[in-house]
Structures are given as C-alpha cells and as structure tokens.
Image (tube, rainbow, N blue to C red; front, side):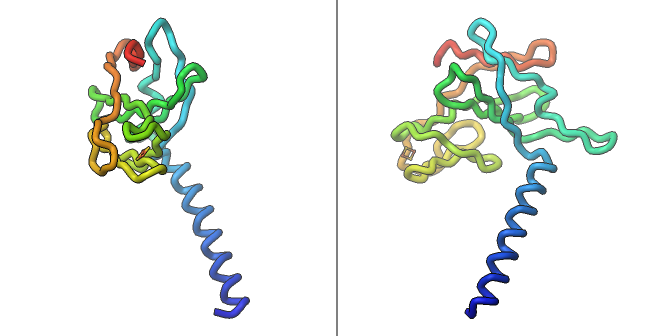
Length: 148
Ligand code: FES
C-alpha cells in the first residue's frame, strides 16, 4: 500500500469511527448518569431509560450509574417495564472494572464475560456478579446498597 492509499484508508476509518460514535449517541443505546443516594438506596428515575423519537418512546437496554461514594459504577439493565437488574461493575476474578457491550459485561483485564443478569459466561471469573435488590416506588428505582 502506498502512502496516498494508506492516508485515504486511515481517513475513511477515522470518519467511519466518528460517525458510528455519533450514531450510537443519538440512538441513546446507553447512558451514564450520576445517581442520588438516599439512606442506603441509590435512586434512578425510570425516565432515565427513555428516549423520545417524535411521539414514540423507546427504552435503553441499560444505564450506568455512578456516584462519588461508590468504588465502582452500577449497571442497571431494563429487562422489561417492571423488571430491572442492578450489577456491580467489578470483575469477580481479580477486581477490574467491567465494560458494558449491549447485553454483556466484559473485563478488559483477562476477558471474563457476564450476561445482563450477572451470570458468568466466560472464564477466568467463576463467580457471578454482585447484584442488588431493586424496588420501584413512584417511577423511581430504589437500588438497595446495604450489601456494598
Ligand atoms: S480481573 Fe477480570 S478477568 Fe481477571
């Protein structure tokens, strides 16, 4: 490959990557937000899962919730309108922070994977992720952090 072709290829790859990032943001596939802690509950509004497209409402598969007092974020998956799963984003192998890719969480350290309910689907981790009880009160998820 000569220099001109190399630069064209790199340029197209760069444009494609930027366009994909914008597309993913505009689709609202995921969202990172700061949750409020009240007593021992992390509070997340159900509206944080919503995205509007004209008059239609769509729902994100998950949101990632941070709070300065938490060592790791919590990924909250929307299983359906009344069922959510809150997962501690710390790998059960050696404690690295996980990354979310759609319905799975991956560990960048050694490649463990977990499904959207926290179950190990790929080793070396052998234990499922820590999850938290959730109650829905007044259109708000109350994620109990008593076990953290
Ligand atoms: S720390 Fe996650 S796989 Fe090793």
